[in-house]
Length: 96
Image (cartoon, rainbow, N blue to C red):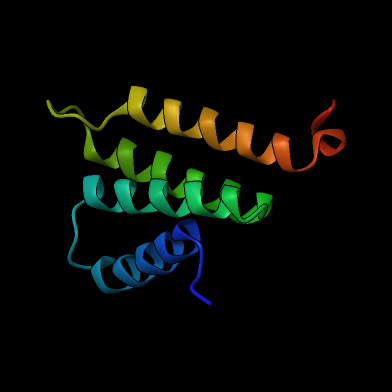
């Protein structure tokens, strides 16, 4: 049996992040953390999701201003979608 795509995404993002942590720039680290956060939300792991989103926000802040397709708006959209995934998995836990 094969792992679901989001689980493979989390594994790939973690592996890439570990390998690139020292050499990658902040934008790449933010993108990898964002992908990890999405996958962790799909796996219903809220604490891991919060950690990864925090890393993405921090790395994006380190990147400064730049013109491309990944920025604060993209991160906010992915964060919102991931939070919806968490709520759908256990609505009562997020009722407050």
